[in-house]
Length: 166
Image (cartoon, rainbow, N blue to C red):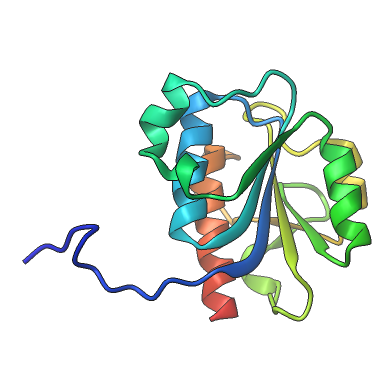
């Protein structure tokens, strides 16, 4: 018998992970990010950028998770990251760079709360945030393309992170 939302008994938990979106603006992507923030028990979701709103396209994709996920909309991603770093969070950016390391090689621990920064659909995580990061991670890819959709990449990253923190 296939289980539904009502008869699964996965334990509810919250991980010490804050997801910061650096100018992710596509409404269906944002709605999907609410869903995975809920699914992976993320502590908080920051939507950073200009003109971000919770509209019909977002809520259609989020399937009401915007009502249960702790989130905040902020214009200035640098200010959010600086504040979190000052409070003792480790800043980890998900981006392919010349110095990034494969996600599976980084050991995640709950000793320091984690901020995972994901970037703009077209331009990725901004250079300023990359420079402020304690680590830059990427997902190894084996095909022709050098990138994947921000939501798919975030899914993979949060799966690996929460798996290690269990």
